Amino acid sequence: MNISKFAEIAGVSKSAVSRYFNDGYLSQDKRKKIEEAIEKTGYAPNIAARAVRTRVTKLVGVILPKLSSESCSRVAEGISEVLNREGYKILMISTANDAHKEIESLELLRKNRVDGIILLATVFTDLHKSVLSKVRVPVVIVGQYLKGYNCVCHNDREAAYMLTKRMLENGARRPGFIGVLMEDRAAGAARREGFDKALQEFGLGCDPQFTETSRFNMDSGYDCMRRILSRKKIPDAVFCATDDIAAGAMLCCREKGLRIPDDIMICGVGDSKVARILYTPLTTARLHYKTAGTEAANMLLSAIQNGDAIQRALQLDYDIIERESTQRNK
Image (cartoon, rainbow, N blue to C red; front, side, top):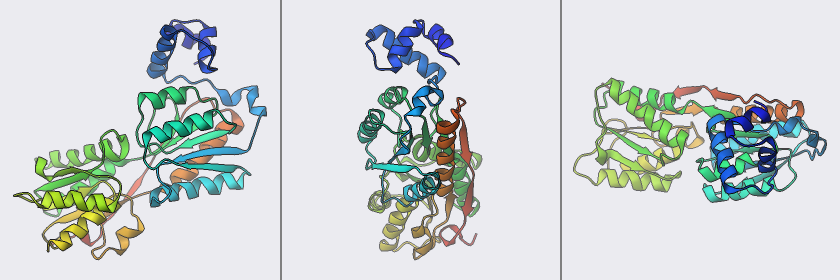
């Protein structure tokens, strides 16, 4: 879509659109019309194809939720291998899973000279979208999908579905769920959708007493499981949104004298190192994080070097790794 067509859809002049994308003065009414049209169409100017590309810096900004996260470090490894090979330097920013810091980081990179941005976001608020619409360099989003941008995603919904289905096939009838915030479309909402899909196929529901919302760490997973186990009834299987959450949940079960998987089955997502070294090895979904980083970097380089105007969304596959934590004798 060119600027003339977009201006027609927005109901403003081409010069108004140009001022918007170049941070010029614009009335609130016109700004609102343009932002509504961006939301509707996903329009973004093909900055990479402009002459501004002559100001190449060979510097790429990468925004990560947490440097200590194994999944993030694997994504970063894939990004680094590709960009280093092409002579690019990386400015890496950790946001500690703070959406406000993500926005601050985007603003920082937007106002400074980088050739492109790779963003591992947790959520996408209206403010995220507003800032992203003003970014003048190519952007690739990893782990989430956002219309109008190049994205590399995981099949979170189907991975959660297959893991839950495996526990139900192995005899679970009182399933529980320890997830993360639903505002996180991938790890939160999509994994819950997959869990619910499996339950529906078996004609089951999830007792609200068996549901908790965790942060992305073992301590929080432990606390969530402790609350679940403190209630009158307890589940016989629990889907956990990440391996770290599952590891904390398993520790709590062990301290309570519950046998895994005989008393309670547990699974996670990510196939982290901890999943393989737990006292009861963890059933999990292997998500290809390093590949996600590699694909995102290649996508960004293509946009930088070739001025690709067509946005792509790449969804990576997954592998179910069944270990002892769900292998109950039926």
